[in-house]
Length: 128
Image (tube, rainbow, N blue to C red):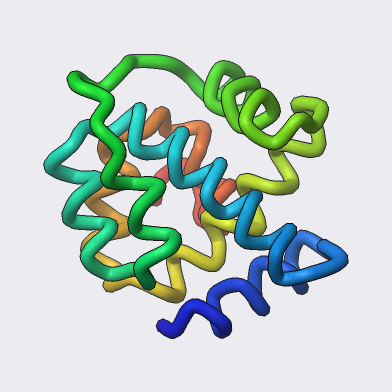
């Protein structure tokens, strides 16, 4: 998926004012995902995304951190300057778009690295 297509979907789903805002939110959410899944998985995911978004996944962070949904959303909120409830909306806009931008098996593998209660952010049920 091209960058403009990805950002248009995120903008529409998140009801953002511009593609710049959609890109900022996308980078923030992907940055948090990368800190949770580890470098190898983040690099694989980055290979399926356009360059500006892929860079948010490629930053060196060392070992993956273990944290749940609440912490995931708090970290997104910190990155975007939003409230946790808004961060849930932001994460859903980005991650549901991600499911259309990358192969299904990549999303399935990514979900195995995240808490099961994050599946709904991808537009899936906890059973995947």
